[in-house]
Image 1 (cartoon, one colour):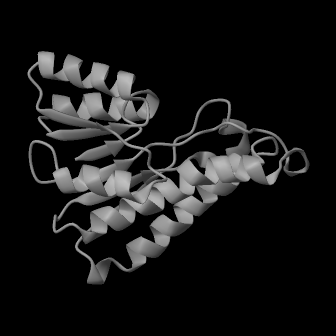
Image 2 (cartoon, helix red, strand yellow; image 1 turned 180 degrees about the vertical axis):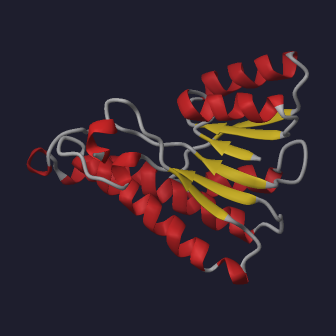
Image 3 (cartoon, rainbow, N blue to C red; image 1 turned 90 degrees about the vertical axis):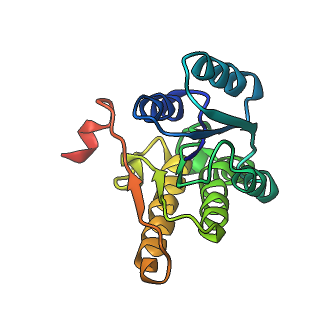
Length: 183
């Protein structure tokens, strides 16, 4: 299973949980030092992992990860890579903010999905969004918009699954600080 954004946060926790269940992983992150450190830790504990520095907005970077396939044939992908920076209202943002967030949060997910769908595996694709992709949050306009897009592309792709052998899920995490927006 390939995991983007594997070196920290939700990506790292996902990798740790999957390894506990015996999964063979391909760890991907733009932060080479951290992804190597995680891989070495996991290998030291008996896990079989492959790692690669991957910049998810760059198509060739993701394709090389999925083609190399690490220790075994890929059985799916978990798209966790994302950046929450550039928080604020629509009024406070410029095109540079949108480009930076959308490059990772939307283009990166799309690139990984496209590359994984071209593979011959039967695995799942799990895209990590956010509760803010379901309910807007005033001070998170760019981030919310990018996560709405992740949910949108996941829904579109999932509706096409009869012609594709993959299931698509979009996990929307919620923190206590966001819980007020669900009421």
